[in-house]
Length: 393
Ligand code: SF4
Ligand code: SF4
Image (cartoon, rainbow, N blue to C red):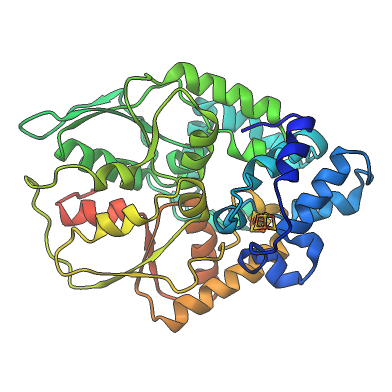
């Protein structure tokens, strides 16, 4: 929700400064500074909105350090809408001037350009020049070995005997470019359960990164394009909870749902799922836990796999530090939080880690690789699709 300056002050006034959110805030836990806590940031936002404090670099630093993880929002007994406060503050007072974002904008806007770039990266990786690619910058270092790019059809009809309905699938820039296996697995499972899957060609980025950068004009442009592209009569299913959370907040005329949440409530009685005698740890992305509040559906979905033991990762209440573009813009804090996640993974001796957000997946996978930890990290839908016979070859 976008707030005007007056609405921002009214929402900030709803904070009674009880401090119950403080222990849930990752940045406050790391710095111990009130100004890096939700309560402190809300006071700062209100003071700047009322011209009591200047909108200077110190203010910007404290707002920039916020992950937008919204753990504070989940903990707040007064239901203060912290997400709307920080989004609106970024839109009104802080526009980031970041070179990589300016360069990335045309690719984010245009799926054709994004597809071209994906093909180029894939070809470079095939030719084994990826060492060169990874020396270029920190964003390139996050790149996994990508699958051969896919040209999506507009319709994937159900493979079940009786059709249950129609759904739209949101591709998302990062998932489309780097995680096409998850999208293919989602289509496979949805088709098997009786759903026709529609992929509107005009769909575009969800706008979350632009919003995080304070570029509200760009975010709204992308939103309007998605608004026109998707049929309002079908649910829009997302595989990346970062996209899902952003669309849920701002694409108000459509019903947006995480793919696991949708699937967990479907009829599975006619589907065969092979047993998997393994422990699967689940990492809860903040965007699924605090944004869409549907993290429980991932456990419900994976528990459909006979004999699989589904276990929450012990540090699930704390952000991994990925947080959209945060891993690029705030690498120091992002790495401190990543380190906590890696310790939890090592302590639990994790073999398989399921996560529903491509951002978390890339950030954690980079940490695992740097520490030479052999953990298979993938989207939960890939795990269940494989047990249903999905073969990506
Ligand atoms: S969104 Fe996350 S990092 Fe930001 S104030 Fe709330 S808990 Fe702290
Ligand atoms: S828990 Fe809610 S009311 Fe209490 S300090 Fe935090 S934001 Fe304010």
